[in-house]
Length: 365
Image (cartoon, rainbow, N blue to C red; front, top):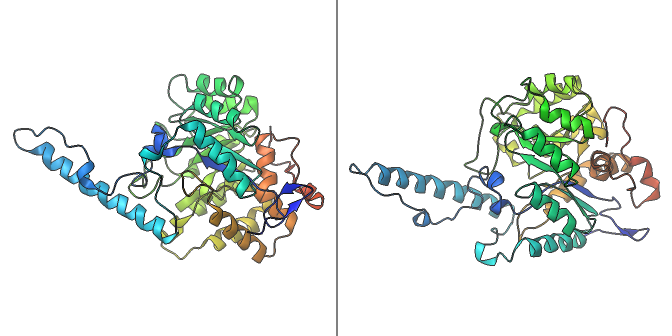
């Protein structure tokens, strides 16, 4: 690992790293577990609970089908982990509680020279508040809503910002009860009032067996909302997944829309035309520049912990593209610092201090 210290602070390849997109205890979080597909499922179909058989055996047949489906999706996820050389997630028997896992994350960030991590989900806003406090200054957290159009959603979000100290909102478009361009702006107006970012996951959700597509999963509908509430920065994770073209045009139309780089981005394998992670970086950088691309790892479970492979692959791509170090520092730290309101943060390398995000097109807290 090339992790030189600069001015007494950790760096990776001379870059101060802020991870904008981390999940905490996904397997224990009802929201993220519902999207996980087979990622956390057992490979043993016989461990799936069987319902009481009715007079015609319908429940038995249904449960047999469920067992088969769960085993197949779990195997697909297991094959993915093998191809990336990732261990299986820790079993429930190894769970020693959230405090120990939070401490494990503090150590994990230190081990990999990551200065700061922003958790986007943690099993609820109160749990996120506790997690951030446990991090001792190295964590920030976002509120999460299953449906921003549900009754009292705006009040719940505002409470998370005002009383729990959270720094933004994470939502999953495929779980919304309405499209994002619904005229109900109550939640988004809270984000505007407190000048915090909104991370909206569009495209397919979860590992194998998750949600592939539905009527609310497309990002093109964000244009009307982003133009209606220009004070809010809307961040679309994973480069927009299968909706790359829509996201690029959306960013052309709306200067307050950005993308994050989080995850393996293995979704490129399913595109009809050949597409690579190198292509994504080049296309977004050449069209939008470095100020609207934000590094995230999408790290979530142990023993994998921090997905360092994602970071070093992405850094390699940026260096090989010939990006100047100041642009790389923006993508891997400066832009996140601006969005999260880390006003006192500057890169460890004084020569990269100008990479602290101050882009006029992106409102920051």
